[in-house]
Image (cartoon, rainbow, N blue to C red; front, side, top):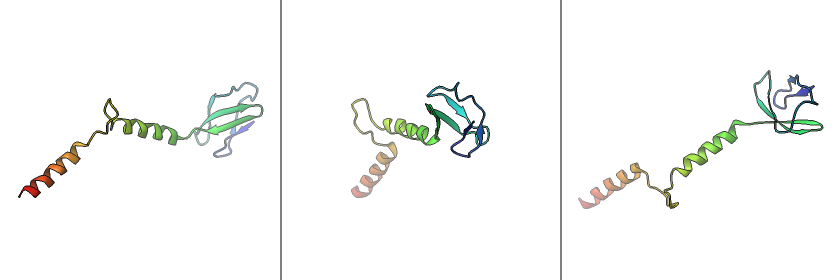
Length: 89
């Protein structure tokens, strides 16, 4: 019998049937668990933080053009224009 590393609930699976890399779900806390080794079976929680970090990296990539140059935000350009107008007066 395996136990969830997050909530210690019993996970009913045959330890001889699981494979490394297999994803299981805890019936109590619904945490997704990856089988990191099979003899003995070890489970690691798959955190949402990894997915959030990947999303942040994708968003950061959008700030660069094809040549890798940093793109300026349109809002920043508008602020710069307003400051230039004030200096001209």
